[in-house]
Amino acid sequence: MNDHAAAGAHMAAEILEQPDRWRELLRTGRGELAAAAQLIRDTDPELVVFAARGSSDHAAMYAQYLTHNVLHVPAVLATPSTVTAFGSELRYPRSVMLAVSQSGESPDLLETVRSAQRAGVPVIAFTNSSSSSLAGPAEAHVSLSAGPELSVAATKTYTAELLALHLVIRLAGGAAWHALEHQVTLAAEVAASTVTSSVADLVSALVGADRVLVVGRGYSMSTAKEGALKLMETNAIAASGWSAADATHGPLGQVVPGTPVIALTASPDGRESVTEFAKAAARVGGLVLTVGVPVANAAVHLPLPLSRFADLDPALVPLIEVIPLQQLALELALHRGRDPDRPPGLAKVTRTR
View 1 (cartoon, rainbow, N blue to C red):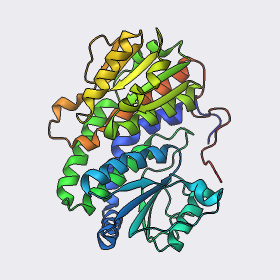
View 2 (cartoon, rainbow, N blue to C red):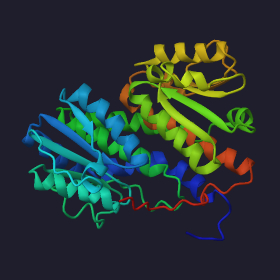
View 3 (cartoon, rainbow, N blue to C red):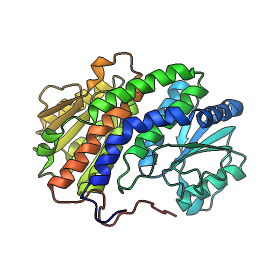
């Protein structure tokens, strides 16, 4: 990383790049995406297993929902410590593993993959480098086509993971390439409008905050968790991301007068429960901020330009709605005098064991 770059310069540039990077994946990745989808079809899995860490784990959560809805088979998230801390070797039904990692270098993720392969499970790797340690031993590899990411906080690699997983699962489910190409082109157009939107009102609402709750539902639960992570990484805020349903069972208790609550209301599936949670948070004095569709008594509302693209696949909304949260993390950090490209104590590649 260039130590002389202005604070946040890398993160700002990488947020702006995202629509073009999605178009690049369409342009260059069709062969790898199709091969990965064919491996899933050939396996005809009874179970799909996702192995990931950090932001990639949030992308895997998104793909877990998509797998259920498109392939109609159970999908689970791997627990790497089962292998590395406990030394367990698992038995699998007929399965396929999708391993997702920006760097492809985390030791516990690599050992989880090796363990699955020893059990006869084929692995599809999704990484940003075809020469990564994860890409080599995988039966199929999908390059994210995101280009070098220099900021510690993942932005373009995260949405590239979402998109790559989306395309592979849709293709495995029988979707035609031309239809997917049309949908991603629409999503890129929406994102191109979104990356230039102002988040000044969201920044103003969070200037003095030391904690924040982010809620979504369904596909947008991954956005809630990823948005909270961006705020933690760049601003040292005690942020947490939740499904609106789970948040009602306990995290609502952390909302006191003035607590910021970001409600993700763009996704039509699950919107009702997010709206109900936002209203409940407002009743106990929470400062409700909405991204997507407005909610009564919200202090701040940030619309997304989705209404101009009525035929956009709702499963692509998470690629778009996370962008304002990335921008919020960036702008809030700069307002607080922090450098979001270089958060203290964090590194670009995290080697968990």
